[in-house]
Length: 186
Image (cartoon, rainbow, N blue to C red; front, side, top):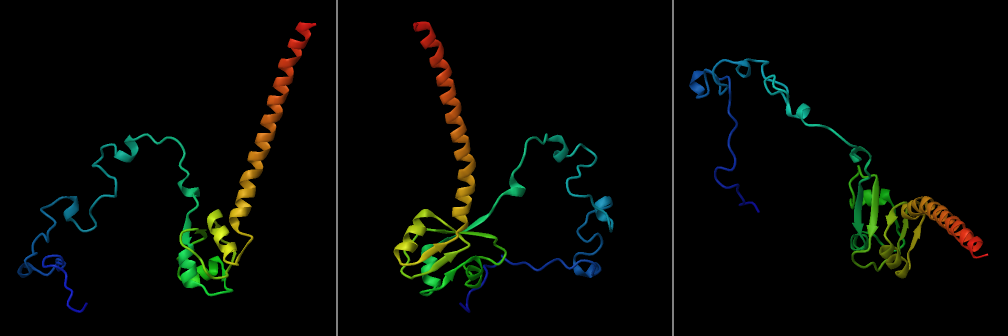
Protein backbone atom coordinates (compact mmCIF):
# COMPACT_ATOMS: atom_id res chain seq x y z
CA UNK A 1 0.00 0.00 0.00
CA UNK A 2 2.82 2.41 0.85
CA UNK A 3 4.33 2.04 -2.63
CA UNK A 4 1.20 3.02 -4.58
CA UNK A 5 1.70 6.11 -6.71
CA UNK A 6 -0.49 7.96 -9.21
CA UNK A 7 0.69 7.40 -12.81
CA UNK A 8 3.04 10.03 -14.19
CA UNK A 9 1.11 13.02 -15.57
CA UNK A 10 -2.03 12.24 -13.56
CA UNK A 11 -1.43 15.07 -11.11
CA UNK A 12 -0.32 18.52 -12.19
CA UNK A 13 0.62 21.54 -10.14
CA UNK A 14 -1.85 24.43 -10.30
CA UNK A 15 -0.83 27.48 -12.33
CA UNK A 16 0.53 30.16 -10.02
CA UNK A 17 -0.79 33.37 -11.50
CA UNK A 18 0.11 36.97 -10.74
CA UNK A 19 3.78 36.27 -9.98
CA UNK A 20 5.29 38.49 -12.67
CA UNK A 21 7.05 37.91 -15.98
CA UNK A 22 9.59 35.43 -14.65
CA UNK A 23 6.90 32.96 -13.57
CA UNK A 24 6.11 31.87 -17.12
CA UNK A 25 2.52 33.06 -16.69
CA UNK A 26 3.22 36.77 -16.64
CA UNK A 27 1.61 39.44 -18.79
CA UNK A 28 -1.98 38.31 -19.41
CA UNK A 29 -1.78 35.35 -16.96
CA UNK A 30 -3.58 32.93 -19.28
CA UNK A 31 -6.58 35.23 -19.76
CA UNK A 32 -5.87 36.26 -23.36
CA UNK A 33 -5.83 39.83 -24.65
CA UNK A 34 -8.50 42.39 -23.74
CA UNK A 35 -12.22 41.76 -23.45
CA UNK A 36 -14.70 41.10 -20.67
CA UNK A 37 -13.13 37.86 -19.45
CA UNK A 38 -9.64 39.34 -19.18
CA UNK A 39 -10.66 42.02 -16.69
CA UNK A 40 -10.92 41.55 -12.95
CA UNK A 41 -14.55 41.14 -11.94
CA UNK A 42 -15.37 40.35 -15.57
CA UNK A 43 -17.14 37.32 -16.93
CA UNK A 44 -20.77 36.42 -17.50
CA UNK A 45 -23.37 34.58 -15.49
CA UNK A 46 -24.09 30.88 -16.18
CA UNK A 47 -26.38 30.45 -19.17
CA UNK A 48 -25.53 33.83 -20.75
CA UNK A 49 -25.06 33.55 -24.52
CA UNK A 50 -23.88 37.03 -25.43
CA UNK A 51 -27.37 38.51 -25.59
CA UNK A 52 -28.74 35.74 -27.80
CA UNK A 53 -31.90 34.13 -26.40
CA UNK A 54 -30.40 31.54 -24.01
CA UNK A 55 -31.14 27.85 -24.29
CA UNK A 56 -33.05 27.69 -21.02
CA UNK A 57 -35.48 30.31 -22.39
CA UNK A 58 -35.67 28.89 -25.93
CA UNK A 59 -36.92 25.50 -24.78
CA UNK A 60 -40.56 25.16 -23.77
CA UNK A 61 -41.23 24.06 -20.21
CA UNK A 62 -44.36 21.99 -19.95
CA UNK A 63 -45.91 19.55 -17.56
CA UNK A 64 -45.31 18.67 -13.96
CA UNK A 65 -42.29 17.21 -12.27
CA UNK A 66 -42.73 15.06 -9.20
CA UNK A 67 -39.03 15.38 -8.38
CA UNK A 68 -39.39 17.76 -5.39
CA UNK A 69 -41.96 15.45 -3.79
CA UNK A 70 -40.35 12.06 -4.37
CA UNK A 71 -39.57 9.78 -1.45
CA UNK A 72 -36.07 8.36 -1.38
CA UNK A 73 -36.05 5.03 0.43
CA UNK A 74 -32.70 3.47 1.31
CA UNK A 75 -32.54 -0.31 1.03
CA UNK A 76 -30.99 -2.56 3.70
CA UNK A 77 -30.73 -6.32 3.10
CA UNK A 78 -31.38 -9.02 5.72
CA UNK A 79 -27.81 -10.30 5.32
CA UNK A 80 -26.50 -6.90 6.51
CA UNK A 81 -28.84 -6.95 9.52
CA UNK A 82 -27.80 -10.50 10.40
CA UNK A 83 -24.15 -9.44 10.27
CA UNK A 84 -24.55 -6.20 12.29
CA UNK A 85 -27.17 -7.05 14.95
CA UNK A 86 -27.14 -9.43 17.92
CA UNK A 87 -29.95 -11.59 19.31
CA UNK A 88 -32.74 -9.60 20.91
CA UNK A 89 -31.74 -6.23 19.47
CA UNK A 90 -34.23 -3.82 17.92
CA UNK A 91 -33.87 -2.72 14.31
CA UNK A 92 -35.05 0.87 13.92
CA UNK A 93 -33.97 3.85 11.83
CA UNK A 94 -31.90 5.15 14.76
CA UNK A 95 -30.04 1.86 15.28
CA UNK A 96 -29.47 1.52 11.52
CA UNK A 97 -27.80 4.95 11.62
CA UNK A 98 -25.76 4.04 14.72
CA UNK A 99 -24.47 0.87 13.06
CA UNK A 100 -23.78 2.88 9.88
CA UNK A 101 -25.96 0.72 7.67
CA UNK A 102 -27.60 3.94 6.44
CA UNK A 103 -26.36 7.55 6.41
CA UNK A 104 -27.39 9.98 9.14
CA UNK A 105 -29.37 12.09 6.65
CA UNK A 106 -31.66 9.17 5.66
CA UNK A 107 -35.34 9.59 6.54
CA UNK A 108 -36.81 6.37 5.09
CA UNK A 109 -35.35 2.87 5.05
CA UNK A 110 -36.71 -0.48 3.90
CA UNK A 111 -35.54 -3.97 4.75
CA UNK A 112 -35.49 -6.35 1.80
CA UNK A 113 -35.36 -10.14 1.95
CA UNK A 114 -31.98 -10.63 0.25
CA UNK A 115 -29.91 -13.06 2.30
CA UNK A 116 -30.84 -15.03 5.41
CA UNK A 117 -31.28 -14.05 9.02
CA UNK A 118 -30.41 -16.34 11.93
CA UNK A 119 -30.89 -13.92 14.81
CA UNK A 120 -34.01 -12.98 16.75
CA UNK A 121 -34.53 -9.26 16.09
CA UNK A 122 -37.44 -6.89 16.58
CA UNK A 123 -38.09 -4.51 13.70
CA UNK A 124 -39.95 -1.28 14.43
CA UNK A 125 -40.49 1.95 12.53
CA UNK A 126 -38.84 0.69 9.33
CA UNK A 127 -40.50 -0.50 6.14
CA UNK A 128 -40.22 -4.25 5.58
CA UNK A 129 -40.86 -6.26 2.42
CA UNK A 130 -43.14 -9.30 2.61
CA UNK A 131 -40.28 -11.78 2.05
CA UNK A 132 -38.12 -10.08 4.72
CA UNK A 133 -41.01 -10.11 7.20
CA UNK A 134 -41.55 -13.82 6.57
CA UNK A 135 -37.85 -14.60 7.17
CA UNK A 136 -37.67 -12.45 10.33
CA UNK A 137 -40.74 -14.16 11.84
CA UNK A 138 -39.40 -17.58 10.81
CA UNK A 139 -36.13 -16.83 12.67
CA UNK A 140 -38.14 -16.05 15.83
CA UNK A 141 -38.13 -12.26 15.52
CA UNK A 142 -41.04 -9.88 15.15
CA UNK A 143 -42.10 -6.89 13.05
CA UNK A 144 -43.90 -4.15 14.98
CA UNK A 145 -45.74 -1.23 13.44
CA UNK A 146 -43.72 -1.16 10.28
CA UNK A 147 -44.42 1.80 8.06
CA UNK A 148 -45.10 -0.54 5.15
CA UNK A 149 -48.24 -1.90 6.81
CA UNK A 150 -49.55 1.61 7.49
CA UNK A 151 -48.69 2.68 3.96
CA UNK A 152 -50.38 -0.41 2.51
CA UNK A 153 -53.53 0.26 4.56
CA UNK A 154 -53.59 3.90 3.46
CA UNK A 155 -53.11 3.03 -0.20
CA UNK A 156 -55.55 0.09 0.00
CA UNK A 157 -58.42 2.12 1.55
CA UNK A 158 -59.02 4.44 -1.43
CA UNK A 159 -58.55 1.57 -3.89
CA UNK A 160 -61.07 -0.57 -2.00
CA UNK A 161 -63.57 2.30 -1.88
CA UNK A 162 -63.13 2.93 -5.60
CA UNK A 163 -63.55 -0.76 -6.36
CA UNK A 164 -66.73 -0.97 -4.27
CA UNK A 165 -68.26 2.10 -5.93
CA UNK A 166 -67.36 0.68 -9.36
CA UNK A 167 -69.10 -2.60 -8.46
CA UNK A 168 -72.19 -0.69 -7.33
CA UNK A 169 -72.28 1.28 -10.57
CA UNK A 170 -71.96 -1.85 -12.71
CA UNK A 171 -74.66 -3.58 -10.65
CA UNK A 172 -77.00 -0.60 -11.14
CA UNK A 173 -76.26 -0.54 -14.88
CA UNK A 174 -76.96 -4.26 -15.14
CA UNK A 175 -80.25 -3.81 -13.27
CA UNK A 176 -81.30 -0.99 -15.61
CA UNK A 177 -80.45 -3.08 -18.67
CA UNK A 178 -82.44 -6.03 -17.32
CA UNK A 179 -85.66 -3.98 -16.73
CA UNK A 180 -86.49 -3.07 -20.37
CA UNK A 181 -85.92 -6.68 -21.45
CA UNK A 182 -88.42 -7.91 -18.88
CA UNK A 183 -91.02 -5.32 -19.94
CA UNK A 184 -90.58 -6.21 -23.61
CA UNK A 185 -91.21 -9.91 -22.96
CA UNK A 186 -94.58 -9.32 -21.25
